[in-house]
Image (cartoon, rainbow, N blue to C red; front, side, top):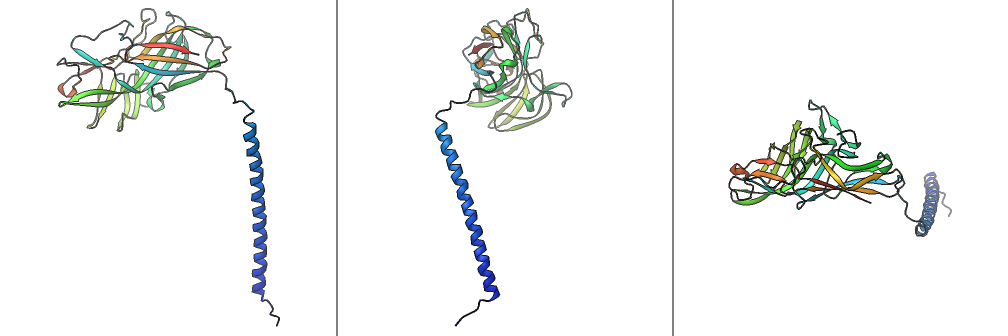
Length: 316
C-alpha cells in the first residue's frame, strides 16, 4: 500500500535536506580555514629560526633610572659633606618610588639654569590657582626602573659635564616608635616648588587634597591612619651653586657625570643615565632624648626630608 506524503512531511523533508546542505558547506569552509591557518603557522614556526629578532626600529634610545644608596656621602645644599647636627638624628629610608619634573643637561659648571639641553619638562597646571606641577600627570617609578626614555637623535649634540634634575615626589618607608612599640610607616613627600594635588595614595589610604602644596608637604600613613604636615627644610645639594645657582624651593639637584656625556648624533646603541641618589640619614628630626629613634608622639619634629646628594653615570 502506497502512502502519500502530506505537504507538511514534504516541507519538513526538504527543509532538513536544505539545512544539511548548509551545515555541510559551513563545515567545509571552516575546515578550509583551519587548513590555511595550519599552513601559515607551520611556515612561521619554521621561518622564525632563520630570521633574526628585529632591531630597534626607532633608533638608539636614552633612558634614565633612579637608584638609592644609603652609604653614599651625605651632602649639604652646597654639595659639601655634612654630618648630623647636635641634637638631631636621622635614618636612611627605604625608597618605594620617585618622580622628577625637569631634566636638563649642562655643558659646564657655568651654564646658567635653563640654558642647557632641557630634555624633559613635566606637565603644569593652574587648577589650584598659581602655576604648579600637575601631580596627576607625574611619572612615578620604582627604584631601578626606567623613569623616562628619549630618542637619542632628539637630544641636542654636545658634551655635557653636569645634569640637573628637579625631584618632585618621593615615597619611602621609615621606622618610628610610639608608646614604646617599634613600628614602620610610609611617607609621601612632595619636593617640587609647588604641586597641585587632587588626591594621592600614601600606601593603602587615599588622601584628598584638591589644592596646591608648596615644597615640603608630606603625608605619613601607619596602621592607625594618615597624618600630614609640612617639613621646615628640604636639602637640595648643588655642588656648582657658586657658578650656577638654583632658585630657592626648586629641588633642582645637580650632579657631575663620572665622565663627560657626549652626544654626537651618530650613536647606534642604547644608552642609560643611571642616577645614584644619597639617602644617607636623609630623613632628619630633632632627637629630644638622644636615643636615635624617631618618636613623633613625644614631640620629635621632622626638620628635613630632602635627599643628600646625587651622582650620574652614563651606561652604554
